Length: 226
Image (cartoon, rainbow, N blue to C red; front, side):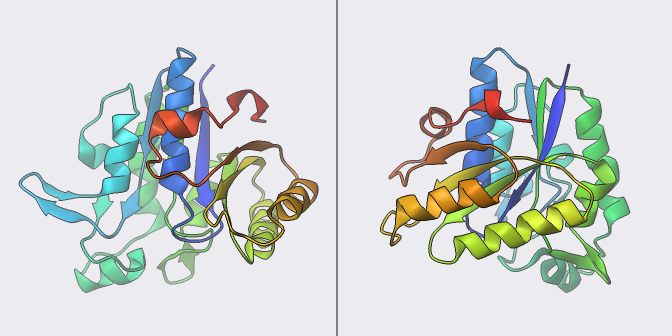
């Protein structure tokens, strides 16, 4: 039976892709087929093949089901700014409907383990009153939350978990990605997160010099996913 999840973060630069790639690698080591989608990405590089996003490429590298790049990352923008602003600069209107169809195609491949990765935090704007969280709602996917462990992370994590629940989605699990290993009272902070978040902790990933997918995977526990 295939399983699919939406990967969200407590903020931007909390390591969503690092953790997602690790989860995909862990699934592959269990003999599961894998696939991931990155519906919208900014901060892309111009290549001979078109705009390419490093995060989307990292997800594609851990996907055993092979799709064209555009199928995985249908909306790619060069400026490293909020997606709705990057889209506006090039005259593209982002909408839930525009993102929904290609991500439904990703899910339709029915890989054993599929991840759809968001951008930034939970309430990233698309256009008008629509947010990227509305895509997760439309896809009706349970959510894996990547918590960037640093000062202030408890507030960010709890507010995000509350927003996910308020949107009618299940928090399937969360990952503590230790961005700042010098965080004061680190163990106490992690204990508080475990107490307050209504889902299992899938792993505590330490700060690494080279956070490769295999290195990250060894800290993750897929068996704890709801």
